[in-house]
Length: 166
Image (cartoon, rainbow, N blue to C red; front, side, top):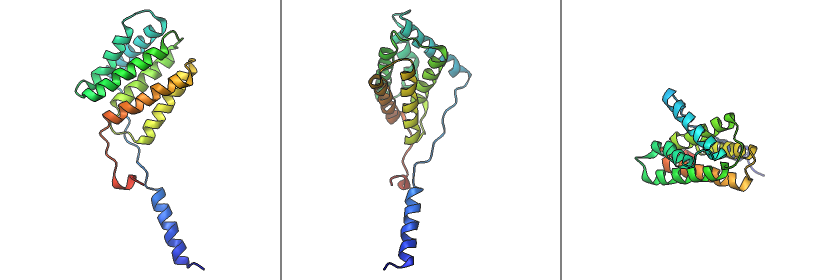
């Protein structure tokens, strides 16, 4: 038979480990100039979707890439993210509200430097679901979501603390 002290110690250890998760980090909020930039990104997405402007893909990459100009590995990942997004939204009907949310999600993927792994996963899931609402195949939406994770891995400044390793 085990002693009550043994059970108490096990319960305390279980509660301690359950509480050791990465805390959520601050999510950046776009200011007035960023909102204008997000409008440009939404227009790029709209032009890609309608085929209105053949250079819209390059414009999208430029509009998103300016946030990581000083980080070459991240810049390459943002270029790949732009390419993947452009390829999946091409020839799709992209409502304005969906375009606005997609633009914000892409900006967050690039600008959020302190968010937790759980927040990154939520951003990936939100973006994947958003893309699927406009008729994009799940596999293609997953590829965009995966690239968001790669961008976040390269831009994050958040260091895991010792107690988050459990």
